[in-house]
Image 1 (cartoon, rainbow, N blue to C red):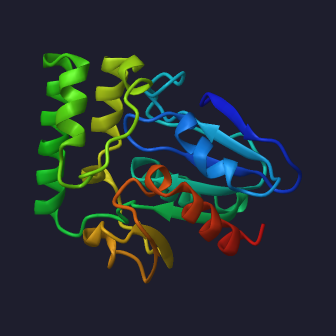
Image 2 (image 1 turned 45 degrees about the vertical axis):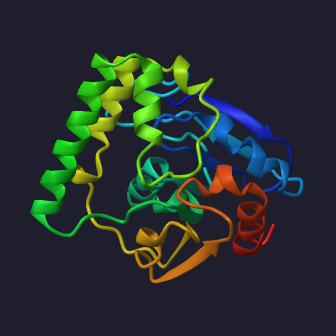
Length: 219
């Protein structure tokens, strides 16, 4: 079972949030602060925060709105595909719906294996500097204090096991992407652009993400 955090108390169908690689459930606190009263639950992904690494996971809630960012978005797509009866709605943010060719998948697997190797070779501060220095994130950098407390072997296992190089392709009707994150603008049939944000939309502009969620879920 994944470790969970109550991010906001309220009635109605709960909103369940999945963070990205290196994050924890607390990454969603700024978004939830801007939401109206509703029941918000954040889960630590496998190998992150208080959740040990596992190759499979379940969410023991009978019905919920599922929201995922980046790696969490990819896991959200996977979970919704396997458990459609539990999903009141699915919202993905900055999450790739799946690579198309075997060559792309192999390159991604090799890249993630290289990053996993660096997790063991570098001090965590140096690894985080390199990770967030990728063009994908510039110029934004998150608060690294919680990210420095992760379990390195579990993180590495999650990065490899849940690599997009192993992911099937999903057809996503609608997804969120930051207006500066142009590589993600055309991955969905309809893209909701989050202004003044790059890849980490929920951290860079939590108020706009919360407003878009309210319109999508009709909170």
